[in-house]
Image (cartoon, rainbow, N blue to C red):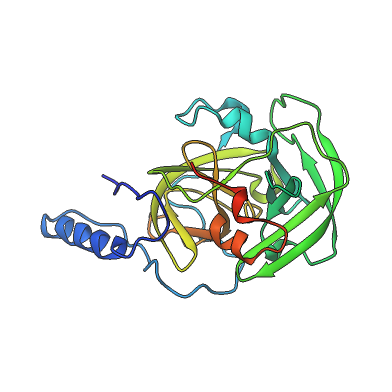
Length: 255
């Protein structure tokens, strides 16, 4: 059973409790998946094939999804493919909605091509627009893109509140939009870790959503393998807001 996450990212006892829990399982003779230490120092992102968490990719076309995240159809409209190689999310901000993606996907001042509603059985017409990268960083690994044309969709709010189950809506390898679910593992050093949440190249920059459909983190790195070992990770929304000159602390919702 997954450990119930706390209400905020600062979890000084999280790693100790998790370790105690795993030792208890080992004592009972059950095999324990190997997860990396969550307090490792963040490294520069590298393209990796080790992003599949288990023997099968559990991607669901977003318009076929019937899982436990009830508001996915509302949130998925804000997810966008960037230059055919990354994913982003239109987020709510007091200075105006912007697309949030990974910093290693774009460069400061770039003109990015963004495609909304690229889906199997789309529920609306695709929207192609351009945007300017107004902020870009590798630590934390994020970028903000101001759009030339805003789509008629509801931006996703930011949050610091974790939930036991998480979801990522993404464009893996530039394919039509899919969703995958997984489990919150822990958070440390401004990073959030999750297991069983498949991603691939092209998923970088996708939002990590809590059960309420708020953006908890930004997916940037993968360290899963096909035997279910390891975890994927991303930077927290809180870390991104702290680093940003555009975003404000009031842009983080309380739920």
